[in-house]
Length: 328
Image (cartoon, helix red, strand yellow):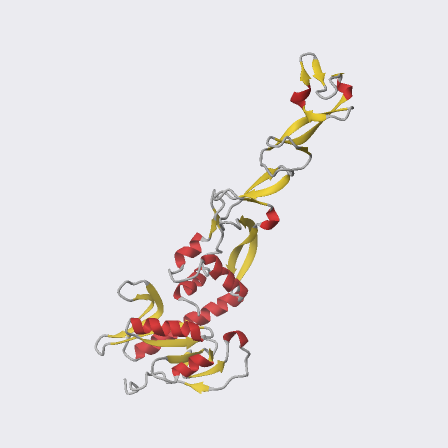
C-alpha cells in the first residue's frame, strides 16, 4: 500500500530535483525534506525512500557513509586512535630518540644541561649517536609504538569500537526514475478516477485529506453524502495485501465509513478477495486502457510476495455496497 504521505513525497520529486541527506554538526543524519511530507503513521523517511528505491520508483546515488554505535545506535561516531597495548586514547604522537645502545624514548628523556644524555647507559651523546623519529607514546602505560589502533568513539555514550565492529550506514541521494514517473502517474490517475466515480454518485469528495475528529490520519479520497449520511474512504494500492486491508477496514469502521480499495495492478491477495465477497469492503481495479475506469474485476494471488502474472482466478466485485445498488 502506498500511503497518502508516500504518494505526496514521490509527487514532490516531479518539481524538486532530489531528496538529499542532512548531516548535522553532531553527525546525526535525516532527510528533513522527506520527513516534512510524510504523515505520522508513515515509516521513517529513510525506510520509505529505500523501499521505493528497491522497487525502482526512485534511483539512489551514493553520497557518503556514517557509522552507527552498536551500543546505543547513535549516529555520527568520531574517529580517534588508541594505544594497541592498553586501549587508552591518550596515544600522543611525539619525537622519539633512539641511541645506538638500543634504548629509545621521548626526546625529553634524553635532554640534559649539556645537550643529550642516554637515560639508560648515561652516555653523553652527539647528534650522530642518536636517531630521531616520530612515534606514538601512550600516556597511560608508557608503551611506545609506530602505528596506533583505529577506533570510532560514540559522542552519546562514549563507547569506542574498531571501525569494523560499528554499523555502517550508506547515505544516498534519491531521484525519481522514468519508471517512477509512470508509476506515480498511474497511482494519481487511480485516485482521481475513484474521486470522479464517487462524485457521479452525488458524493462530495476530497483528495489527500484528513478523517476523524482529531484529524490525525489522511486518506487518498474521502467521499461524503450529507443528505443520506453516508461516508466512504478510498485507499489506492498497487497489490493490496490482507494485513494492510484489514487495518484500513478497521480504521474505516472507527470513522463510520465504508472502505473502498483500488488496486492499480489488477491483483489482490486471496484473503482480500474473500473479505470483499461480503458487504464490508469494496475492491476495484483501475483500468487505464482507453478511458480511465474502475472495473469490478481483479485477479488473486495467495501472497503479494509470490505474485506472478497469469496464474490467477478471476473474481468480480460490485462498485456499490450491497443493498445500495439503487443509488442514482
